Image (cartoon, rainbow, N blue to C red; front, side):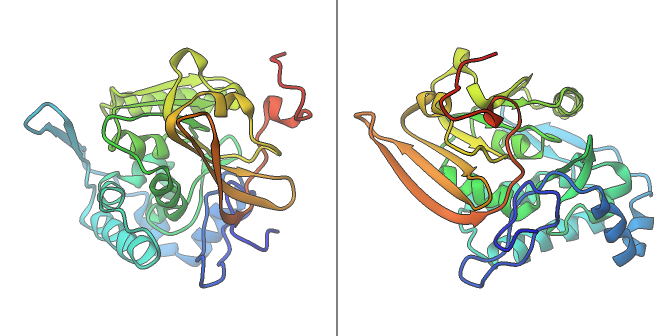
Length: 290
Protein backbone atom coordinates (compact mmCIF):
# COMPACT_ATOMS: atom_id res chain seq x y z
CA UNK A 1 0.00 0.00 0.00
CA UNK A 2 1.21 3.48 -0.85
CA UNK A 3 2.76 5.62 1.86
CA UNK A 4 2.41 8.94 0.05
CA UNK A 5 -0.60 10.35 -1.72
CA UNK A 6 -2.61 7.92 -3.74
CA UNK A 7 -3.96 8.24 -7.24
CA UNK A 8 -5.72 5.69 -9.44
CA UNK A 9 -4.67 2.81 -7.23
CA UNK A 10 -6.34 -0.39 -6.04
CA UNK A 11 -6.56 1.16 -2.58
CA UNK A 12 -8.46 4.09 -1.04
CA UNK A 13 -6.51 7.34 -0.68
CA UNK A 14 -4.40 7.80 2.45
CA UNK A 15 -3.94 11.02 4.39
CA UNK A 16 -0.70 12.86 3.56
CA UNK A 17 1.44 15.15 5.65
CA UNK A 18 -0.18 18.47 6.50
CA UNK A 19 2.08 20.35 4.11
CA UNK A 20 0.74 18.70 0.99
CA UNK A 21 -2.57 17.38 2.32
CA UNK A 22 -4.22 14.17 1.40
CA UNK A 23 -5.27 13.04 -2.01
CA UNK A 24 -5.66 11.60 -4.93
CA UNK A 25 -7.64 9.82 -7.44
CA UNK A 26 -8.01 6.19 -7.74
CA UNK A 27 -9.45 3.66 -10.09
CA UNK A 28 -9.67 0.13 -8.88
CA UNK A 29 -10.64 -1.68 -5.56
CA UNK A 30 -14.12 -2.98 -5.58
CA UNK A 31 -13.79 -3.65 -1.83
CA UNK A 32 -14.24 0.11 -1.31
CA UNK A 33 -17.96 -0.33 -1.92
CA UNK A 34 -18.46 -2.75 0.97
CA UNK A 35 -16.25 -0.72 3.32
CA UNK A 36 -18.30 2.38 2.60
CA UNK A 37 -21.54 0.48 3.13
CA UNK A 38 -20.25 -0.86 6.45
CA UNK A 39 -19.28 2.63 7.64
CA UNK A 40 -22.41 4.42 6.44
CA UNK A 41 -25.43 2.11 6.26
CA UNK A 42 -27.87 5.05 6.27
CA UNK A 43 -26.28 6.58 3.19
CA UNK A 44 -26.23 3.20 1.48
CA UNK A 45 -29.97 2.92 2.04
CA UNK A 46 -30.60 6.47 0.82
CA UNK A 47 -28.63 5.84 -2.38
CA UNK A 48 -31.36 3.45 -3.49
CA UNK A 49 -34.02 6.18 -3.36
CA UNK A 50 -35.13 7.38 -6.80
CA UNK A 51 -33.69 10.71 -7.93
CA UNK A 52 -35.60 13.59 -9.53
CA UNK A 53 -35.12 14.24 -13.21
CA UNK A 54 -32.30 16.73 -13.78
CA UNK A 55 -32.98 19.89 -15.75
CA UNK A 56 -30.85 22.15 -17.91
CA UNK A 57 -31.27 25.63 -19.32
CA UNK A 58 -29.39 27.98 -21.61
CA UNK A 59 -27.87 31.15 -20.27
CA UNK A 60 -27.68 34.30 -22.46
CA UNK A 61 -24.98 33.82 -25.06
CA UNK A 62 -25.87 30.19 -25.70
CA UNK A 63 -23.58 28.48 -23.17
CA UNK A 64 -25.38 25.59 -21.52
CA UNK A 65 -25.66 25.78 -17.75
CA UNK A 66 -26.43 22.41 -16.23
CA UNK A 67 -28.46 22.47 -13.06
CA UNK A 68 -28.72 18.88 -12.00
CA UNK A 69 -28.85 19.54 -8.30
CA UNK A 70 -30.42 16.27 -7.21
CA UNK A 71 -31.98 15.95 -3.78
CA UNK A 72 -31.52 18.65 -1.11
CA UNK A 73 -29.21 16.23 0.69
CA UNK A 74 -27.03 15.86 -2.42
CA UNK A 75 -26.87 19.64 -2.75
CA UNK A 76 -25.82 19.93 0.88
CA UNK A 77 -23.14 17.27 0.50
CA UNK A 78 -21.77 18.88 -2.64
CA UNK A 79 -21.50 22.25 -0.89
CA UNK A 80 -19.85 20.58 2.08
CA UNK A 81 -17.44 18.77 -0.26
CA UNK A 82 -16.30 22.06 -1.79
CA UNK A 83 -15.93 23.75 1.60
CA UNK A 84 -14.22 20.98 3.56
CA UNK A 85 -12.32 19.02 0.92
CA UNK A 86 -11.26 21.79 -1.46
CA UNK A 87 -11.42 25.32 -0.01
CA UNK A 88 -10.08 24.13 3.33
CA UNK A 89 -7.05 22.74 1.54
CA UNK A 90 -5.18 24.40 -1.32
CA UNK A 91 -7.82 24.70 -4.03
CA UNK A 92 -8.15 28.46 -4.50
CA UNK A 93 -9.08 28.93 -8.17
CA UNK A 94 -12.63 30.36 -8.04
CA UNK A 95 -13.55 28.85 -11.41
CA UNK A 96 -12.47 25.37 -10.32
CA UNK A 97 -14.35 25.73 -7.04
CA UNK A 98 -17.49 26.89 -8.82
CA UNK A 99 -17.39 24.02 -11.30
CA UNK A 100 -16.74 21.42 -8.58
CA UNK A 101 -19.79 22.80 -6.81
CA UNK A 102 -21.88 22.55 -9.98
CA UNK A 103 -20.99 19.21 -11.59
CA UNK A 104 -23.11 16.47 -9.98
CA UNK A 105 -20.66 13.73 -9.03
CA UNK A 106 -23.54 11.47 -8.03
CA UNK A 107 -24.46 11.04 -11.71
CA UNK A 108 -21.03 9.57 -12.48
CA UNK A 109 -21.17 6.70 -10.00
CA UNK A 110 -23.41 3.60 -10.02
CA UNK A 111 -26.77 4.16 -8.40
CA UNK A 112 -25.98 1.92 -5.37
CA UNK A 113 -23.01 4.20 -4.63
CA UNK A 114 -24.72 7.57 -4.95
CA UNK A 115 -25.12 7.97 -1.21
CA UNK A 116 -21.31 8.16 -1.03
CA UNK A 117 -20.80 10.41 -4.06
CA UNK A 118 -19.61 13.47 -2.13
CA UNK A 119 -17.20 11.78 0.25
CA UNK A 120 -13.49 12.37 -0.34
CA UNK A 121 -13.03 8.84 -1.57
CA UNK A 122 -12.70 6.89 -4.80
CA UNK A 123 -15.77 4.84 -5.69
CA UNK A 124 -16.22 1.77 -7.90
CA UNK A 125 -17.56 2.49 -11.39
CA UNK A 126 -17.37 -1.00 -12.89
CA UNK A 127 -14.80 -2.91 -14.95
CA UNK A 128 -12.62 -3.05 -11.82
CA UNK A 129 -12.14 0.73 -11.94
CA UNK A 130 -13.05 3.66 -9.70
CA UNK A 131 -13.89 7.34 -10.02
CA UNK A 132 -11.23 9.71 -8.69
CA UNK A 133 -11.80 11.37 -5.35
CA UNK A 134 -12.94 15.02 -5.62
CA UNK A 135 -9.73 16.58 -4.30
CA UNK A 136 -7.44 15.20 -6.99
CA UNK A 137 -9.89 16.13 -9.75
CA UNK A 138 -9.84 19.70 -8.46
CA UNK A 139 -6.07 19.72 -7.83
CA UNK A 140 -5.12 18.51 -11.31
CA UNK A 141 -7.67 20.78 -12.96
CA UNK A 142 -6.27 23.77 -11.07
CA UNK A 143 -2.71 22.77 -12.00
CA UNK A 144 -3.59 22.99 -15.71
CA UNK A 145 -4.33 26.75 -15.35
CA UNK A 146 -7.09 26.61 -17.93
CA UNK A 147 -8.64 29.39 -20.02
CA UNK A 148 -12.17 29.44 -21.52
CA UNK A 149 -10.98 29.02 -25.11
CA UNK A 150 -8.66 26.07 -24.41
CA UNK A 151 -8.72 22.66 -26.06
CA UNK A 152 -7.82 19.91 -23.59
CA UNK A 153 -6.80 16.27 -24.02
CA UNK A 154 -7.60 13.81 -21.21
CA UNK A 155 -6.03 10.34 -21.06
CA UNK A 156 -8.29 8.04 -19.03
CA UNK A 157 -11.99 8.92 -19.30
CA UNK A 158 -13.28 6.59 -16.58
CA UNK A 159 -16.89 7.48 -15.82
CA UNK A 160 -16.57 10.91 -17.47
CA UNK A 161 -16.51 13.02 -14.29
CA UNK A 162 -13.13 14.68 -14.91
CA UNK A 163 -14.09 15.33 -18.53
CA UNK A 164 -17.32 17.01 -17.39
CA UNK A 165 -15.39 19.24 -14.98
CA UNK A 166 -13.01 20.25 -17.76
CA UNK A 167 -15.84 20.84 -20.21
CA UNK A 168 -17.46 23.37 -17.87
CA UNK A 169 -14.29 25.48 -18.10
CA UNK A 170 -12.85 25.10 -21.61
CA UNK A 171 -14.03 25.14 -25.19
CA UNK A 172 -13.33 21.51 -26.20
CA UNK A 173 -12.35 18.30 -24.37
CA UNK A 174 -10.90 15.27 -26.16
CA UNK A 175 -10.82 12.21 -23.93
CA UNK A 176 -9.45 8.70 -24.54
CA UNK A 177 -10.32 5.55 -22.56
CA UNK A 178 -8.58 2.21 -23.10
CA UNK A 179 -11.42 0.15 -21.58
CA UNK A 180 -14.11 -0.03 -24.29
CA UNK A 181 -17.01 -0.55 -21.89
CA UNK A 182 -16.10 2.54 -19.88
CA UNK A 183 -15.64 4.64 -23.01
CA UNK A 184 -19.06 3.62 -24.28
CA UNK A 185 -20.83 4.21 -20.96
CA UNK A 186 -19.13 7.56 -20.33
CA UNK A 187 -19.76 8.76 -23.86
CA UNK A 188 -23.45 7.91 -23.63
CA UNK A 189 -23.82 9.64 -20.25
CA UNK A 190 -22.00 12.79 -21.32
CA UNK A 191 -24.08 12.98 -24.49
CA UNK A 192 -27.30 12.50 -22.54
CA UNK A 193 -26.30 15.31 -20.19
CA UNK A 194 -25.81 17.66 -23.13
CA UNK A 195 -22.01 17.97 -23.29
CA UNK A 196 -21.56 18.81 -26.95
CA UNK A 197 -17.95 19.92 -26.38
CA UNK A 198 -16.67 16.52 -25.16
CA UNK A 199 -15.31 14.03 -27.71
CA UNK A 200 -14.82 10.47 -26.41
CA UNK A 201 -12.65 7.90 -28.13
CA UNK A 202 -11.72 4.29 -27.28
CA UNK A 203 -8.02 3.61 -27.55
CA UNK A 204 -4.54 3.69 -26.04
CA UNK A 205 -3.88 7.22 -24.81
CA UNK A 206 -0.11 6.78 -24.83
CA UNK A 207 0.08 8.29 -28.32
CA UNK A 208 -2.45 11.02 -27.58
CA UNK A 209 -4.78 12.28 -30.29
CA UNK A 210 -2.47 13.66 -33.00
CA UNK A 211 -5.31 14.41 -35.43
CA UNK A 212 -6.61 17.06 -33.02
CA UNK A 213 -3.27 18.38 -31.75
CA UNK A 214 -1.91 20.73 -30.60
CA UNK A 215 -3.63 21.05 -27.23
CA UNK A 216 -3.60 23.86 -24.67
CA UNK A 217 -3.49 21.31 -21.84
CA UNK A 218 -3.16 17.54 -21.37
CA UNK A 219 -4.13 15.60 -18.25
CA UNK A 220 -3.27 11.93 -17.61
CA UNK A 221 -4.94 9.83 -14.90
CA UNK A 222 -2.69 6.75 -14.85
CA UNK A 223 1.07 6.56 -14.35
CA UNK A 224 3.50 5.69 -17.13
CA UNK A 225 7.05 4.86 -16.09
CA UNK A 226 8.27 7.75 -18.23
CA UNK A 227 6.75 10.79 -19.89
CA UNK A 228 5.30 9.75 -23.27
CA UNK A 229 7.05 11.86 -25.89
CA UNK A 230 3.95 11.83 -28.09
CA UNK A 231 2.03 13.77 -25.44
CA UNK A 232 4.80 16.34 -25.07
CA UNK A 233 4.87 16.76 -28.85
CA UNK A 234 1.13 17.53 -28.84
CA UNK A 235 1.46 20.49 -26.44
CA UNK A 236 0.93 23.93 -27.91
CA UNK A 237 3.18 26.83 -26.94
CA UNK A 238 2.59 27.68 -23.30
CA UNK A 239 0.53 24.52 -22.75
CA UNK A 240 0.79 22.29 -19.68
CA UNK A 241 0.88 18.51 -19.30
CA UNK A 242 -0.04 17.21 -15.83
CA UNK A 243 0.52 13.52 -15.11
CA UNK A 244 1.83 11.03 -12.54
CA UNK A 245 5.18 9.47 -13.52
CA UNK A 246 7.17 6.59 -12.11
CA UNK A 247 7.27 2.95 -11.17
CA UNK A 248 7.23 2.29 -7.45
CA UNK A 249 7.94 5.86 -6.38
CA UNK A 250 5.78 8.25 -8.39
CA UNK A 251 5.44 12.01 -8.62
CA UNK A 252 2.73 14.22 -10.03
CA UNK A 253 4.55 16.29 -12.63
CA UNK A 254 3.67 19.39 -14.62
CA UNK A 255 5.50 20.02 -17.90
CA UNK A 256 5.03 23.37 -19.59
CA UNK A 257 6.05 23.97 -23.20
CA UNK A 258 8.01 27.17 -23.84
CA UNK A 259 7.90 29.40 -26.91
CA UNK A 260 11.17 27.99 -28.23
CA UNK A 261 10.28 24.38 -27.52
CA UNK A 262 11.98 24.31 -24.14
CA UNK A 263 10.26 22.40 -21.35
CA UNK A 264 9.78 23.56 -17.78
CA UNK A 265 9.32 20.59 -15.45
CA UNK A 266 7.76 20.96 -12.00
CA UNK A 267 7.41 18.15 -9.46
CA UNK A 268 4.17 18.81 -7.61
CA UNK A 269 3.40 15.90 -5.27
CA UNK A 270 4.45 12.36 -4.38
CA UNK A 271 1.62 10.10 -5.54
CA UNK A 272 0.71 6.50 -6.21
CA UNK A 273 -1.39 5.78 -9.30
CA UNK A 274 -2.12 2.55 -11.12
CA UNK A 275 0.25 2.03 -14.04
CA UNK A 276 -0.77 3.20 -17.48
CA UNK A 277 -1.64 0.12 -19.53
CA UNK A 278 -1.09 -0.61 -23.20
CA UNK A 279 2.05 0.61 -24.95
CA UNK A 280 3.27 2.34 -21.78
CA UNK A 281 4.05 -1.09 -20.29
CA UNK A 282 6.85 -1.53 -22.81
CA UNK A 283 10.34 -0.03 -22.63
CA UNK A 284 10.65 3.78 -22.93
CA UNK A 285 12.47 3.49 -26.26
CA UNK A 286 9.78 1.29 -27.78
CA UNK A 287 7.43 4.08 -28.77
CA UNK A 288 6.11 2.82 -32.09
CA UNK A 289 2.51 1.64 -32.32
CA UNK A 290 2.00 -2.12 -32.56
